Image (tube, rainbow, N blue to C red; front, side, top):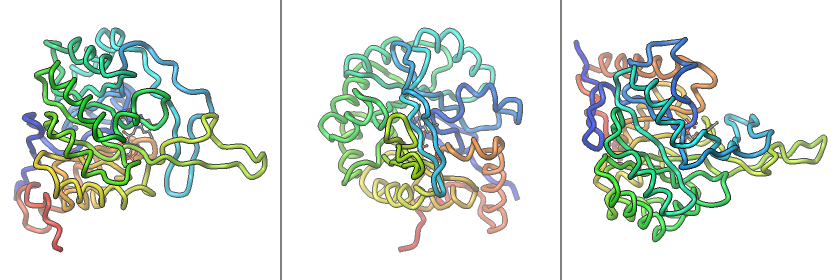
Length: 304
Ligand SMILES: Cc1cc2nc3c(=O)[nH]c(=O)nc-3n(C[C@H](O)[C@H](O)[C@H](O)COP(=O)(O)O)c2cc1C
């Protein structure tokens, strides 16, 4: 029996609902040695900022129980380099490209949106208002519903592209933030970014990360992410990209049942470079084994 995995997300048609989570796939160069990147539903690029950023001091990654902490700090070569070198490379795969952006100020978010106008191959913009590892911008926008609304409105005013807003879990009420960004014009939301954490080396008494704290990702955060997707799905009427600790197709299916239309895979890519392909195949198998013909038969179907 053939199974339909295609979904529509913020007006973009994806042949399947699986994509990389921003920052864990670069532009796909390394992964193209392991599999045909064109098999993914979409590419989500690493966060790009207006000007190049060096990121934080090393060490910036450490392993924890069932997860990892990172404090990369949005290292990237800046928008000009991205448009010249990374975007043309990603276009080769002929799948939708979601460009993830961050700024220190509202005006920087607005400027990047303007600079992406009319650029071939950009299917959507994802606003990163949830990075916990930078001093200005990032989470400072995503943790306040008023600022989250303002940054979304500024981006909305400056782009006609589909707008996805990536939410932080480091808040008490994520539904309130989701409502704010949707009211300001977000076409979809993605969640979750990493949870702020800390790890200490008991031999040196020093934090494992030079930045002291970092963002926790991987299997440890999956139940938090599933709960948040479920809450947000009941609050807003836009598609959700579920993210957080997805390692297998079974993990992804939990997110669909909670209300996600698509999923993004992060930490799993570092452990198994073909994780996303295994997940696509596994979702297809799960559906056909149950006589289901369409991925949409799972979305939001948790039985309460
Ligand atoms: C090493 C690393 C770098 C990341 N860089 C970014 C980034 O540049 N932009 C962003 O929006 N999220 C970034 N994230 C967050 C992921 O996109 C994702 O939201 C998070 O890791 C949770 O998913 P996971 O548990 O599947 O990794 C990064 C995560 C990791 C582990």
